[in-house]
Length: 209
Image: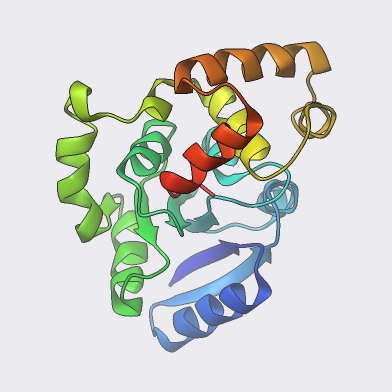
């Protein structure tokens, strides 16, 4: 039996996933979490083979949680479930330790296939994304500017695009305001934007929020 922990902050989506997994004879949901902190806490006492991880949760988001899950003594396989069908986002998740990347609009049967594959030690990439990843992520001249951001800069960028201010982000990431301001200046330079409005526009155009 494949034990799955579902980390997703939208209750309706989480319930839908639990029902879907409940229909499969070879897997069961053994826990759930609505944010990254809750997920990391649950993993201390819930044993599972697969974590189904929403990438954009409040607090510690999915991308930030992946290395922390991988650092556990017996880490489960991580299957990222994202609303972003973005090759760059998938590449980032896999780079920091996810075993697979599925999108929320993929066929439910494919999600079960993905869970089985990563539980067995394999890798899974949403088929619609796999081709784009080969081209987009592999070819430097077609890579979007946000691929240049470091992991921390990307975390700050995402939060700024969602309307958080420097103080909020400093608290969420447990860093000083000065450090966040430095990241903000660097990432705006890399994205070639001069204002918060331009930053939000960039995020919307690239389907990052």
